[in-house]
Amino acid sequence: MKPDATAAADFLLEAFLPYELSVAANRISRLFARRYSAEFGISIAEWRVLAVVGRFGTLSPGGVAERTEMDKVKVSRAAASLVEAGLLEQSADPQDGRARRLRLTARGTGVHQAIIPRARALEAQLSAGMDPGDWATLRRLLRQVSAHAQALDDPEPGRAPAVP
Image 1: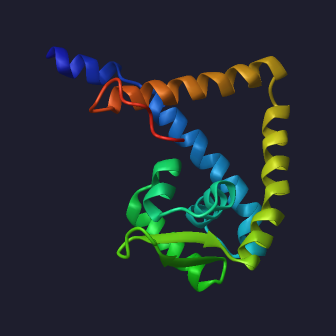
Image 2: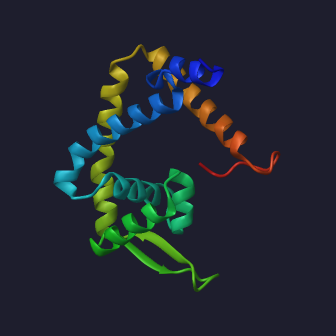
C-alpha cells in the first residue's frame, strides 16, 4: 500500500474535528429550527440573518455574511425572503447607492424577540447535559478554535480580525 493510501485508510471522518463540529452544529440548528419554523415560518438561514440584524442593527448583506460565516448568496436569498415576509426592510446605503442595508421591521423585531426565549431555552437544555465547568470550557475552546482558524485563513497576518 502506498503511504497516501495508508493515511486514507487510517482516516476516521467521524473523528475529524471539522466534520464533528459541522455535524454537531447541524443537529443543533435542526433541533432549534423544529421549535420555531412551524410557528414563525422561517428557515435556519433566515433565522441567522434575522438574529444578526436583531443583534447588531442595520447591516449590509455582506456584514451579515461576515458575522454568520454564511455564503453571500445564502444571505441574499434569506434576506429577500425576510423582506417579502415583512420581517426585514431593505434600503439603499446612503454612502453607496449600489449597496443595500438591512434592518428589522416592527414585525421582524417582534419575531426576533419571540424567538430569543426559545434560543435561550434550547441552550439551557444543551448545557444541562454537561458539567457547568465543561460547558464553560467548551465555549472558551470554541472561541479559541474559531479565532485560530480565522488567523490561519487570514491572507494578511497581523491585520485586525473581522468582527464576529
